Image (cartoon, rainbow, N blue to C red; front, side, top):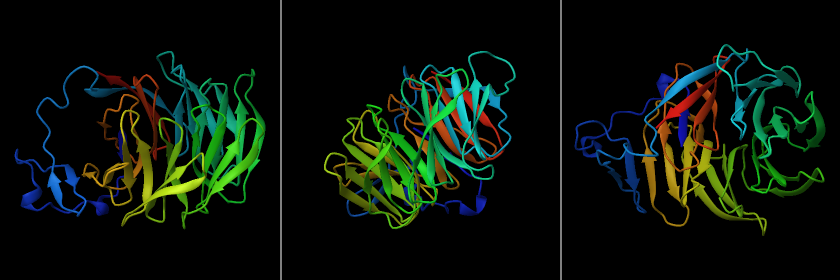
Length: 332
């Protein structure tokens, strides 16, 4: 899991009471929250972050100077290409070679002044779906010599805040600014269903590993779980803060939720247990589990707005407020 923050120092978490400090004297950052709301610090054994398969650090290998604030990033399965979404366009970068980078293609989507908020690749790397501050999603054919739009999907909502693709690549889910989750059939390019429940914008989304459940977070301070087969809401979790990001753990029954309040809450999907992580000094705008289920945390100089992890857990890409994207190699 990667969690990122924006640098608003006025949102810092106040000092913790002595009862919630860890035994080592350092402030605890992980707390178990019981069903009745009691918080207890969780000590980690000294070897918790050592060993095979656990990342030691991330080494910066590329800076991609997009030129506008980068609100969306994605990396291809082959790890050769990175896509950065900014104002009005997505830029395509080849990161297979060292050296300074200029984009190999520019995909003009939306209007020039509207930000891309999400871009997702289908697993074969030949199709890119782009959404943002417009009522239309664009579907790009990347297999042609020059990428081209092959379809557009238009809903009634003025903006799309987040996208997800079903594991079989047949369906796209769009989190809309009106709170609806729109379900699109990618083959027929038709709207097949809307999940209605969020009373303010739906900001983030992830799908359970088996493809049967959808998790969404909203600016209405709720996280909701939806049954994709029956098309109904299964669960609702209420918080005191807006939800900006979430991720479903690929290896277990846990959901990590990034809050405007700067906490990350980790919920068990079927028990009342949850954990709170106090790692960030400001709102958690982007969060993602590594495919192996590991937790990873890193700090950058400017606000990080988006992140992606390559399917082999070897690379992390971040998009930031200082108009660039950064590619890191994960060192194990």
